[in-house]
Length: 211
Image (cartoon, rainbow, N blue to C red; front, side):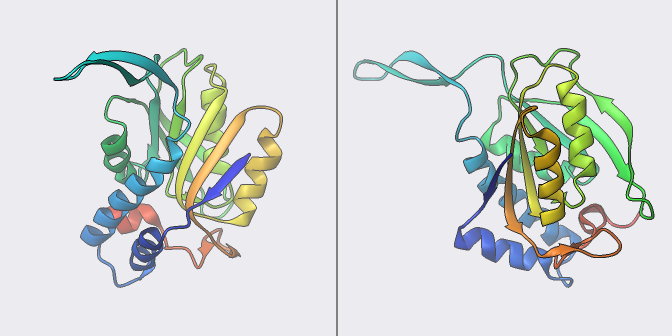
């Protein structure tokens, strides 16, 4: 697995405000959107391209176009929805699939409750949006869904990550699939409740409120 931890002062600043417990939901949503746009810029660096011939007002020239098939963006519900617009701002022609998952707060086991993905994803580049890579269980289940449909190249964009989750994903998919993680921060650890420390709390609740 390839891990990329962002090193940019704007990302560090926005993440600091995002972490602050006094940041309200409206500001949290705005900052999440902005952070994902910045992370997506680097996460799409290896997106597949093809030459494209165009005519400018002056002459014909060869430029660059996104190659086919179109990339797929998969937010993990519900918190991943808060990351979708920021990703599509960078990659507006991408298709969007959805995975709904929930983690048991006591056992940390992950259960899928919704899935909307193409049946065949062979040859597609897929970008998974998940605010937090904590134990790695949610991201691993998402990757398994994608591998079952023919994907071999998965890029995950996470706001914050824990060493335990990074290690779990690395061990599970080493030699199995190309998995890349782009994150704004690699935090210290997980606490006894499976939350990232210092983290930013429950991203879904902070985005949308407690339901």
